[in-house]
Length: 279
Length: 133
Image (cartoon, rainbow over all chains, first blue to last red):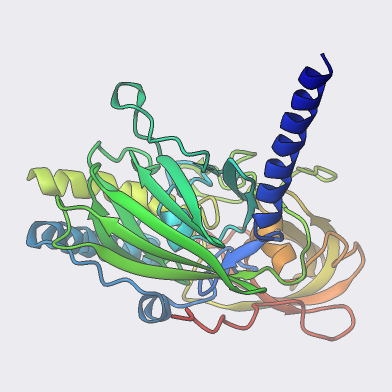
């Protein structure tokens, strides 16, 4: 009896020590993070001009000829449409409010801040637009094929290599409305609604990320995209995230709230919130 | 229409939705080619998702006042550059630079401004230093 109790106590202690050990090994990535080079301004756009976004962020995907042809065609149509919007001959193309960027956009070029919560069995990335990435680090494999379907955030598993979180993501699809299956556009966004199509990935795209903290004010994500269907070779790019200044808590976006810009007679207009409304 | 072009048209709509996530709508109603300066008194500073609005009373040529609706970005983006719900109060006399509406409605897109203390309102943050790598 005494031996049983001692064995139970020893097992409990060992378990606690292992949990505590795992917790103490978790890096402290607390605080709010934003993508360096993707800064929102007070007007509703981005600070950085598209040229700067294209120059300072690593892009340069190894598109195969067919993918590049598609990208070029998209870009030509976008350019014409943006000109029409600016001239007022096109009412604009927003088909509805949404805060969803999906992966990989949410890590590559998004104005939304996020938090990272590492725990021994799972790391969670929570974005201000209410998007969440769950990265399971408990040793499991990807969800079995017959239980898996594509989502805008994919299926992510990971492991720790020292203080570096290595994430493996598959089964991603596009969050953008009306995009047919089989296309995951990656877009660079600049000031004054400028945007550039960088590439279009396939459903077979496989993403490997290595996230680490090079110093206490920055996180770095080294991303490799493997997509033999649309890319000629693995695509390597990285992003740096910095602590959000002026703020020490999460503030949520609510894109699904009231429409402040209803379409009247085919044109967008303004609909200020009623006095006293707070959402 | 070719299949690629068909896809392109669909994707363009989607992409503009993506860009609209920055403002949750289109910028189409604002005349991006014009910048107008208006002076007036804050009637209300409506701090709410998905957009914050400054309701500004502006004197017109008749000497009466018009109410202008000036649209800003979301609270999430504004707090990150230092704005607060109390940054502007009813009665504050301010000057705003805006992109006006295409259709002549008294409203516009916030660009920058001068606050009641004569100092520039919290505006565009300094651009980031670019990617470290």
